[in-house]
Image (tube, rainbow, N blue to C red; front, side, top):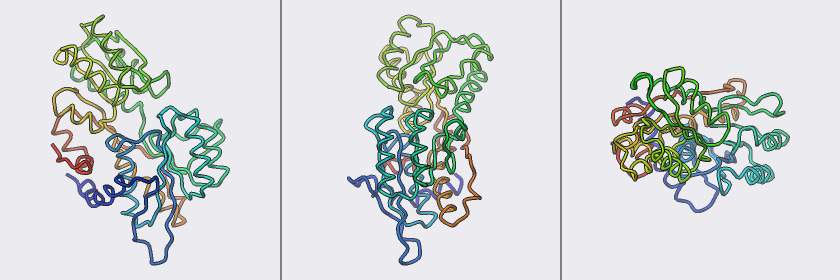
Length: 338
């Protein structure tokens, strides 16, 4: 295990205290010179569960802020649902009015939150986008200080490459998309699967929801029990697919692939249910964002990378978990690494 991952353990105590708090404002880190004021940072993901991508990123951000010696107030706000775009815009307007000094945001919809980006820019608040690494197109009329994330197409390619290396041509594949968006298509990578000789026999939109994926896979397994592989384009949809296959008594007959390798997916891989999932390290993304905030605070904004991508790896075994997943992912949940 490399030193970066081992070093994450030092931030666990602080993180556990923070997630236990009942309020929306968190403070930590007495490492700046005496008398230095806390920097107010807004953290705005589209949803938040401690064990999912946004919770893991939050952990990396707080650990990173500690590592950088920044005294901070961290304001965490989320809409009631991940697709409540109007509510996230209202949250942006609210935190701008509060006078936050930095905004770290994963939009509910990359294209659909253009007004939120412009509102932040007009207020002069430095914006750090995460979960996306592509800069805004010119037509958005907005910009971010940096885009920290990964290419969704790299996740789709990782699964396509894995299937090509481990399954024969003619393998029957089903793809469960989220919504009709480029992210879904990038993750599903239909064209790559076809180019690799796979037979895509089923496609469905499950709106990123576990229960909708479950229903879709139940219908799929009834209509096409000859399906070999099911690809879930999100963690929750993949887990819905796993549960549907298990309830149909077909988990030994079909391979299910996930996206993101959140803790629930890792548990399922250990249990021999989920075949594999591609992984982008959210803890590392959060740490990188914290490093960029420190550069900005120090007047070194010109040194901040416009785009930062974490590498994508496939997780298909306990050995792969031990090699690639930061131990804090497990230990912050009060559990041990498998």
